[in-house]
Image (cartoon, rainbow, N blue to C red; front, top):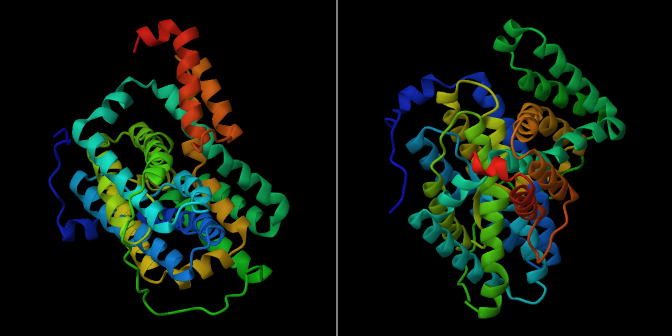
Length: 405
């Protein structure tokens, strides 16, 4: 087996609790708000179009949040790094059309097949070998292309709901001007508070109807293995996990000074995919935006604490999925867009600097353009094709840069 060794001592509970800071709470809450808003809306949309029942969708969310939350806590503690696992968003979109001609049980069977494939790639170390030969500028160009949308959504929010987005942005700028103020009140916690106040005074919160306060009872599904579902979904789902999601998260964490255990992450995604498939959830992945937010500030050695906090929030969300889903979807889109955009500003800046600073810049540019075009081919998302296009162009026209790798 090719799993990376655990080099740090496993922290004690008292030590972890003692090192919790306001920064950890802030980053975790903002990352959680992101994960529980737009991605959840995508799951709801796919479920409705695929004629899934409310119980099916609620069970999907239970597996996606609770099982992946537990997995994230375990891996983050073992490696003392922010390693948060959720579900592949592009894979969720990919599943949508499949539900029109495949039964949900057949799709779940494909989830199991994807999990087995990911475990194999993690045990053999093949994905880590692939990652080691990919130029970092091209990978970060893919990250920049994916995260650019969050920055643009933040700008668009100024015109759609200025009474929410402008006060939040001004608060971010004001609190970022003075280092001493930043230490006492992190900019993003100020942004969060001002955003909530703005929602209250502008009365833009949607109505919450039929709220349920009971803990969810998840469904357990029996998979049906069909060659049609396996051939259509297994490899594309694995590609979305590895190339469209994990590659982002790994590149972001490396850029922040961490050493993410690639083989362990890949195998963990496989195990998570099998466990979550039991409850009808799409394949597990290492999330890019969430790990970017929780690793954006605070001590590098203690950022795993923010991962634990968001995983606990995820578990609670999964247990009360119907209630929290209604609550998150009732918040104004400008609130979530501004929060996510401001939280990812530094990450987006770092991605651009890494992509276009020196080597492989042409390949990085092509990768960036293909990624932001956001056109899927063969039901595989644009980030994957961005990587492929950037690598091909760089290999052909920037040969000297490849020789220096």
